Length: 203
Image (cartoon, rainbow, N blue to C red; front, top):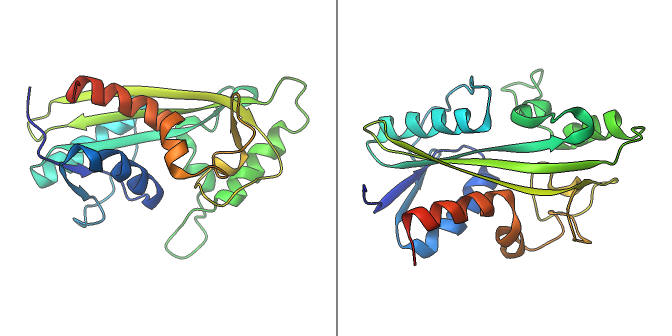
């Protein structure tokens, strides 16, 4: 098994970088991000979370010569047949703004507008595929999920993306209302990351 003394977080999303960095730091590995290394962000052309995570991690590993860890994740709403799913970030895209950009307030309104009159429960899940890639092309994928429901109006300022409208099963506060450490312990990313830890850093 190849050793991990350093890892590139293959993401340009500052929220994801912060969460993954927080999860990696206790492992004692040297951490870089795609932003730190000024890496280009590859186009996500795959049809699954695992496929897109693998694509991004491989691009970073081959560009830097270092192991890379990439996350592809999103919100899957049951009443929308799993949408926005792998297109979660694209639902927030603002192409008419100079240089593009993302507006998750708009994206949350878009989700709610499509399900507010649905007779079925407003159940949803956050899904994460975490891929570890090496410069030689080897990859490992770990998948995680957390179940919950969509609530309205959005609540909380501590999260990012769709966190303000997601209430995990059994919780009274959204992902944007709880402290990052609490979210790290129960999120879809934490589920995938725990599988990565068990495989790579067994106790």
